[in-house]
Amino acid sequence: MKTILVTGAAGGVATQIRPLLRAHYNLRLSDRTPVPEPTPGEEVIEADLGDIAALRRAIAGVDGILHLGGKSVEGDWDAIHEANIVGCYNLFEAARLEAVKRIVFASSNHAVGYYPRAETIGIDAPVRPDSRYGLSKAFGEAVAALYAYKYGAEVMSIRIGNITATPADRRRLAIWQSPRDFVQLVRIGLERPGIRHEIVFGMSDNARAWWDNRNAHRLGYRPEDRSEDHAVAALAADGGPSGDARVDDNQGGVFCVVEEL
Image (cartoon, rainbow, N blue to C red; front, side):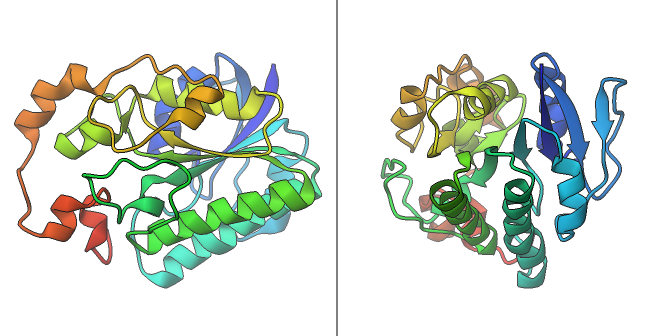
């Protein structure tokens, strides 16, 4: 089994998918805060994304990286800059120094959140961030491209929608991805031969989707779960329109107006 490093291993996404990843990989888990409930088969190495030396120690000897680390919501510029701009660059540079080429980068739908919900977009649509957070993810995709084409990295950037057991509301019926479908995409990013730099959308088989995910399908992605199976509960839980067209009409939702979360 290959060994992969999972950054941001104390976060919500990593916590959901670790049991699924363990079936395929030896896991090295890294975060700047304690990782909850590591199993005997999981190695934990504490590392801050601001510390390249610590990142090199965490990366040394692994076969690939799933980069979930950083700030996962909107915040002030200093917080976003430190975690998602400097931290992302440090991660790719540390991987280059340790000769680890295969990286899956957790991008976000918020890199393109200011497209209208009435429009279906593909990966060729120019970035249109809805927030400083979305801007940082667009930056991360650009860093991935730099390291892929200049330094030979092999990178998949996944524009994650929302990874939970079930979609919570109307918006998430369009962008939801089950944990097992996300892990399927991660495995493609870590294992498929011939990847240089690919961008895909992180979503399940969603009838209400705003994204054309044919590039993921070209790479072999076949989602097993459908958001529409949960539509009754999600629509019942939905709070209805906010009254702000920027929130209600754009794919990024509240990120289009909020300054911090």
